[in-house]
Image (cartoon, rainbow, N blue to C red; front, side, top):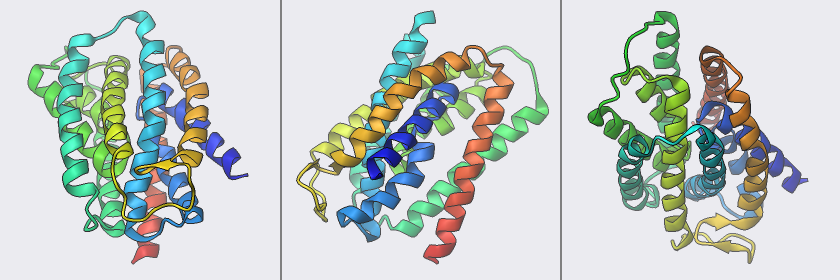
Length: 270
């Protein structure tokens, strides 16, 4: 039954990733911590394991999303200008902060709540304003979007799209569908690099299974990835038929659901 739940989580997360560009993490951050206990992972060690296994599935989802969305053309220059700063920032934060035991469950949950709250506020403000102006996605905007994406991905496992898309959409006045396509590439580059780092790490707590490498527990990561690989292209194709404003509303709705769940978790931790 656990495998079935993980596949279902991957299916839902993958579809949302393809539809909105936020990455599979928005669903998996809720599911993965619930499963880790059965592998003997408890306390603050839950955090790096959650981020690592979520990003593993996210990397596969982002790869297929990049190819699926690329049928209508790639934004190579913009993707690299966002992706490279994201990879550098994410790798540094993962190695210097996340894998250190001072990154507690309470601190992690507070970080996720703050990030999600800012996303909801800024995106809701954009919907109310409904301004129309020319795109202003200059190099500094793209670089800042990548840095924010790297920070969020390494600190929370959300994949980076949850802040990269709003940054490109709000600060760069970029159409949400274009910003989503750029974000697919950024998420793949970032999550793949962080996954490699996690595979060759030495965790403090060893999981109760022989099927693991570094922080990646394959009985968790593989079912999540299978679900995400199946549903991500469906989400991408669905997004091509849905108005940008509708995608934004769906984006906000799921962010709010995860935000409420994380607030509940923080209450229980306190």
